[in-house]
Image (tube, rainbow, N blue to C red; front, side, top):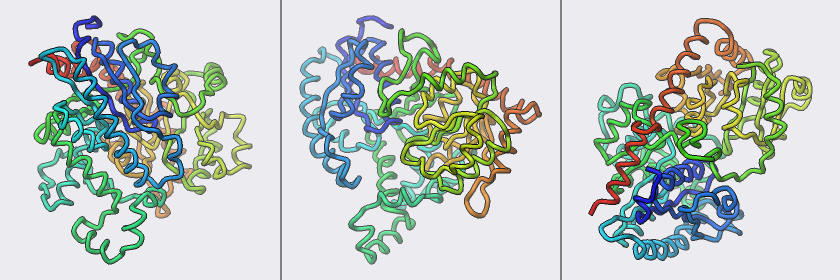
Amino acid sequence: MSNNENNATQVIVLPYHGQGHMNTMVQFAKRLAWKGVHVTIATTFNTIQQMKLNISSYNSITLEPIYDDTDDSTLHIKDRMARFEAEAASNLTRVLEAKKQQQALNKKCLLVYHGSLNWALVVAHQQNVAGAAFFTAASASFACYYYLHLESQGKGVDLEELPSILPPPKVIVQKLPKSFLAYGDNNSHNNNNNNNNNNNNNNMGLHPLVLWLLKDYGNSVKADFVLLNSFDKLEEEAIKWISNICSVKTIGPTIPSTYLDKQIENDVDYGFNQYKPTNEDCMKWLDTKEANSVVYIAFGSVARLSVEQMAEIAKALDHSSKSFIWVVRETEKEKLPVDLVEKISGQGMVVPWAPQLEVLAHDAVGCFVSHCGWNSTIEALSFGVPILAMPQFLDQLVDAHFVDRVWGVGIAPTVDENDLVTQEEISRCLDEMMGGGPEGEKIKKNVAMWKELTKEALDKGGSSDKHIDEIIEWLSSS
């Protein structure tokens, strides 16, 4: 359908401006554009500067600045979000009005907004524009969050009504790090203890930021669609449960086409990068390694490991003698055990950033030690790389449950009484997954199966491809 059939159809995409959130929504925008839809990405000034060169080849994608974030860094997250909402809502109204005027008769206009930006749906409906909430978490996590939202509102659902393959939903809120808690309401949470005690009694004792997060999922039922970066065969039971709540469409994996269906020409990366690319040495080094011999270690752009956990990982690498690429952000580098890292430097590379898609696609990589953020998880599935699951907080624990117990594509190691995954446990998991034993072979068989199914979902006529076409057809109807 890469023709001009839908050129008059207008879709405005409003991402949340974090790396992982941007990646998935920009990729969805590129797929819509390839199918003939005119897409406007409404985002911040800084984001546009980082994207300008990368999507210049997509003629039907335009970038629209709706918020000046050049002096945002000193603001508390609550203040930053309030300022973003106030300024962006006004500018988004202007954008929607303009796009409606460009829209062909008898065709709808659609705002695809990140699920955390609920105010955007209000703006859209005020302009008689349809709204689709885009969630970047797994369908299983969506189900758990929505269940917790209902429970926090005194509208609990019997646990037996949830899909049996889900972990207990409260696992999401049982392991919140101090770095996360620090993002809470810096006024009411810290200063109004009496009020907070009352609120906690009414809301299961949950942290204010968790309640804020749950509200996003609760508001999703007001959207015309809910879009999920997943595909039907991957999370069939969770998707079926969600479909009883809202109109849900799975449209993933939102990974550049070159790596999966190969339908979109020159779609080789996400088109957005907050970090300075430094991939040449990394990829040249991988080219010297044998197939399935390298351990890739990365914990995303937010998770903060303890000094003790970093040491256990380093000791496990030393013990295993396996080649490795270990991504450690500059802000986390001081936690590394210097002497031990120097000792194992001949085995691999410690880098501040790596081109994760290219790394996971490389034949040399045999295991991904991951925090199990959803983007990382679905990327590993798409490339057929086994996962050593070390989730840190929130829905990462749900993803790890599925990696280990549902899909069988990796191992979630045991955490000790000090909340550490020890050297011995990491070494055991690496040996099982990268060795030639029965458990490792079973995992490799499973990842190979899921690798093919991810491609199938986006191929012409696949489940996600059909769902995207259904959205376009709905927009084209009167």
